[in-house]
Image (cartoon, rainbow, N blue to C red; front, side, top):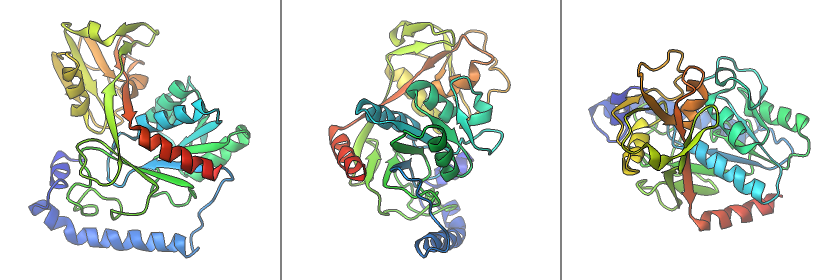
Length: 320
């Protein structure tokens, strides 16, 4: 996704107006598809257990994966048996398969692999999330609830609860693709909204992003994040908005000698050309560690206000 286009999506400038007629066609096609599901011409499959969708309405990442992890850990802490499904964006194939801790990111996707390793729950990927959910329940029949990483517009998987996530971009210029960032019109009915402090979206519960207190390497070596202060290192990030990660490092008192912003889901087929220490996100590390096991991975965590968890638990209890 070009930087010029992303900038255009933040306001209704010349490029956005030029693309606006195409957004009308996109709106028509999206409405026809939604209508086909509502009319039963296209079938939404319910897999037999409650399904929680965590997604967004804008193109590009909005920080959903840390929220998927937080929700999954919360449900586990309640004693529920949880599974996660995902498309596995960025992987080489589109088959249905289980994600195991020793899976390769290129086969299952970086985000599903990160979730499987950090949460310790069954994770399945498939082009069609309903297929992934069926496979998960077949292999893990005691699963009580499924969380879908993304998929708000994947209507073929029936859902019981929708959570829409916004980052500081909010809804951008408010127009649909390609004139704006919206995949579908907003506002639209969802059960819960999560937004960062800078997102001009109301109402919604606030989520704050932060770095974890420790960094670690592929061999399990851990150090306090503070210990990297004053050391010369290169920070790199292949996420939706790399500058967010770099800013968080600086706010934590770390001063990268160099920063490398890479496309989201970058595969690190070629190791970074930097002889010194590397610092990256966990999402990058699951791929980067193949060539640079010495790279320090720093987790991105979220703090969600208590009101969200109370509302979420009420909704989940009603479905269970």
